[in-house]
Length: 110
Length: 336
Image (cartoon, rainbow over all chains, first blue to last red; front, side):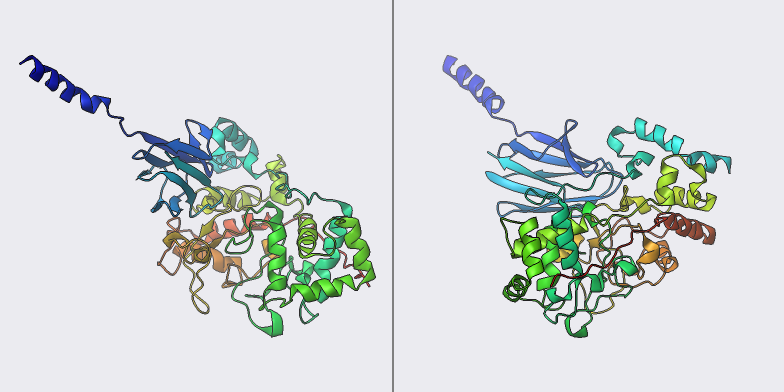
């Protein structure tokens, strides 16, 4: 009976001990990638984490990657809208805007 | 009328600029003349480099036919463009795209209509070596320039380490092109507080530019461009042109082209990447329709419902972006 209780407690603790996937928010402001108010050119995160790209400019952005590791095209979206990407593989992913290609950052997935 | 007058006062926009975070909301300060982009390391501007670039720019011996110079298409007498819908290249062949002005390319983060060059140094060599344009082989060009005393002297003074080389030709042309900047326009004087520098119609046009007509979604800042690429829904005038798609194979890039400057428009007709429109009235009508072709159309494009007066006001505003005394140039005697 005692051992069953211990097993139950451990079983309950396992999900809590697992590392939760993070969700990051990267803004697009003045045609730059910005995080918590500061321009960024690189973001480190863990496999399974998600980045939400939020358009803070009054015009459209179109965030994409054509990296070998992971390709995605979030399409064009307007001011205030955000679109998210889950990074599933370890390595470096180049992220750009299809409309404003001077916007560039890397996501380093550990 | 009073409210329009108030909105168009530079002071009003100065306040806006101070209040707006990071300038995301365009304020009048965003239209002030900034410094040009810094040249790449190793090509800092010197008088010798600019002088070399100038003679190279005007020298038809840079082409395979010895008949076409950079200035043939980028003619200083025609707003540093050619006045044609699309350029004419080697053997009088019609090219696919309009010749863009060289003016203010020093502000551009991307060169060519499709942005395939990041620097003026890289761009300058493109048309020289392009088979359809100046049709020159680099070995022949270096051999010919090396045989000219005047060029040997000028290259030695400007680029001692590079010598007469492909790299030095690109650098010199870029150094010269960075000096080709538009001079003050009435709009600039108005930005600095001279209320009478532009007409009331132009002031109304500016309000439309930033408001109902939404021009500033792409035409931003001093040079009225955004280093961006947009599909404007133009009808094709020849075989379909992929535009930016050739550099980035994405739906939004198909048929998208770089936003050009709006300065000196009175000198640089016809307009658009394919020279589709001879007049600014036609350009405004195109935007007012929201474009003609819906495929991959920029989401910025929508019918604008502008009145005849509003269109006139916009054109009046664009006229205020023409330099009061446009940049002039003396044609150099070429090295012999």
